[in-house]
Image (cartoon, rainbow, N blue to C red; front, side, top):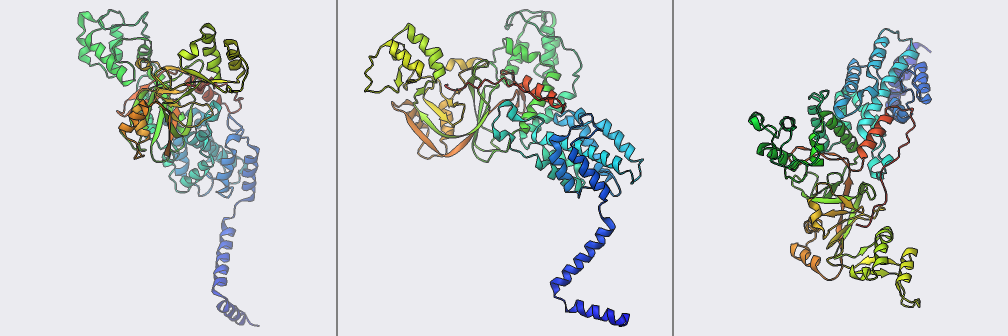
Length: 585
């Protein structure tokens, strides 16, 4: 058969083939051509797979990259296990953008040194001098840059340390590290790595405000030594103190005092005058302290904070926000523990939330836990079910010295049976309480520490929000006074917020229920998320920062954990300071 006849026969076969078969054959032809011209180098692929499997990169000071191993494998799989940064056709812009991201990591409160940027620059310079046949070196340099970028992206997206190491609930570790590889690959393919921080960082307005503040404080002279203000006792308006010139200078830096007020002090510069007093009052007001102008321990601590102190606090606050999952739309209630403050938002963008002072758990014994739960119901005129620990430690000693103590406090014992024949006397009652056969509860009324309403969101720590008859304590600057539950200053307003979506409840019916003789439980038609959080820096609705004392030592603990995380080979043995004995009001 002639060549012309063969060609004619082949053409006839193609014409008579079904259309879908023709499509398949054409695709197979083009794929085979592409594979022949751009097939992955087997040696390169094997070198990458072997290096990733080892989870060790000797070129980096922290050789063990096992925390990022899964994300790295995913990233390279999406790139056919071929080099991402180096080699023919690889984007110079991507390499430059990657190095720029790592260099600017401190803008998000991260430690740029952890990503070994200078070492990576040196490797990339060496790579430029190598031939394409230097497979081992090129692969090693490529993977080193990928490790650093995945490390950075993971830190920015989910945080540098695991919140569960601090007894945080599982919701705070809900973000997946696998998202990092997907997002990173998208920006590599689109050559938009400069936009990666926006995609990875928390979407909360609060985070962006903290980031802006961080940049502003870094512009200040953080190396300058600022003399400490030292007071033997509280300084009151009109009193004399040799440190007043330094106090005025500090108030001037804080923006609370004008230059003319400093100059105008004149011969009375050591007197705590009206201008300085008003400046201190404004500062106290902003920070949620009692605005009386008296410089006590907390106001003094605030005045002694340096820019470096504030930078450290901002970095810790940003780390904690990276742990936060997204909240669903709708009402939500926040309590910032060290701020002693509650916010009740009607929506995510609510700019006029209900705010009020709160009292939280004692720092040494009964710390209020970080939690995220759903408020299910509230109780008007509640009983107080006294926890056994409080009954044993606080109630029993009083009962032993006063037989009428329980009756006078309107406390009844629950669990005694009518058929019990044992004679009721003080000794038997004490024995039954000690053994746990009975428990105490305080009836509703003016003596009840839960006040007129409590708000329930079931949780393992058995804490809740509640009213209190002891209103005077809200005038204190430091309010860690409870057994772990959170007391609210304006319980009636909070009840109005919680029941705002239920038409049968209004201000009048709520007031009646809070004055009624009987306990009344109201189930919410839609549960409300409740978040107890811990951050010592918070930007208020006026866009001004508040810096709070680290009442539970959690900043110190987190800073220690971050220092350990900088060394991936160090054993991470964290001992939480949190005392999980909360519960009971």
